[in-house]
Length: 233
Image (tube, rainbow, N blue to C red):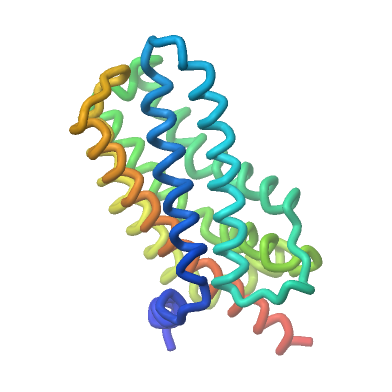
């Protein structure tokens, strides 16, 4: 089976309990809505910022739980929270930090006000995400097992399906993240209305679908890398 078909099988294999999916989705939507309201100028702004941070932690916990459930990791197999967060930050610095540096280096502090800059940022993020795919696979591995394979072994294991992995990562990032960015671009900061709330929820749903697809993809990729390493022993 190809990487894509295995990821699709895993996505629809009911490994993740429906209540966990609902909890994760609720955390995603609630955090973005809280951030939307925190941009208003009323006296509840500080409380909403604090609430947003609390909900962001809930999103992180949900991501951890969903990843472990989708991978089929047993409860007895401990993951590495510090390793996961560390590799996640390092990955983000590559596939988000580099495009941001390029865009702001060209257009300055108001870069994202330019349509061409937003497009370049999106394309750059997709390209860098595809290049950083083995790193994202290794990041997922930190959630599944604390004493897993080294990054060098992960990189070596990803070579057999790197093109599939990179193309899928780029397509998902550019397609769904780009669509979410288009929706959120119609939201005027500080303005609360039924339209802005619906646009925010729509953007969040696209980001949530991106998370689901990438989680399925990365957990399958990690299982392939892990299996290759066990066969080599």
